[in-house]
Length: 356
Image 1 (cartoon, rainbow, N blue to C red):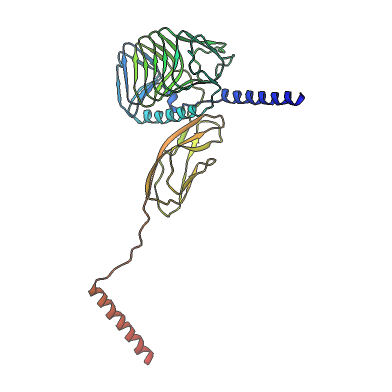
Image 2: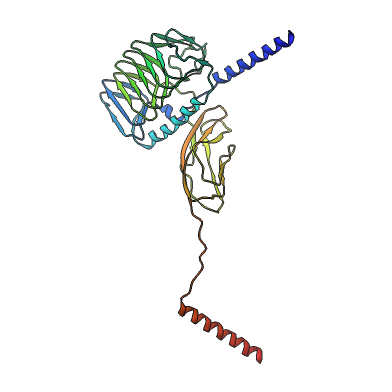
């Protein structure tokens, strides 16, 4: 009986460790944290919406409806380098969230009426909120909540999220919604968290968001809304250099990637794309070394993760040129005849010298 009790205790302990590990995870937005609204295609606003933080779109460039909409404490970035880097960081954050293990499967349940504590909650398909969802932060203003949704997120008109035991915060930084397609917020609803949607985000008339509306590929549509960017839990981590040099097949390659903005050490990984054939990234030092084996252009993203699990990313391109061909000189018939005559003359002079 004692052995059974010990086994049960060990399993329970492992379960608690697993839950604590997920609950202490973070999703780092890096430069995307500066944005209240970020879109992949277009941003369209109707009415006097107020967005706190930057408003940006990339690779699209269309932002309409400002004014009558207004941007507070930020600027509009329409198809510029700032928006492009934010999209790179959003993609890294989205993928990081997708890779965090689930604590509780809520598939088929409506979020309305639930009271949830910090953790990772999953829906294999769509998620819906009708009524009120309560997030019990257990006294920690930086408590981590992650909702992983397989397809759509939809909230009903007048629905809301309220915070309990929030430790004094009204705009928590570590509530994340990873949405597998699109999110739609109902008329007059009140929502909390950073919404990371693969496709589009729509805030209907009077819907308010304490957090961020970040769409990777599609549009963000606003209509008389308030989007209030919450303070970020992670600092901005910058990956350098801004560009990497090219190489050549058969010649040694050595380039250094570094990171700054948070306490190290950093761990470096390739989070999308691939390095050129023959090259490797040292995860501890950030050095890219090796000897290229193929003539090609490689596009990839390197992410640096700090000791505190915050991360930053940068997209790179390395162009590997072909090996230089050996050049063998060729002579025409006249040149060959002249060379032969010259060599014959040299040989004659040598023989004459020897005969003396």
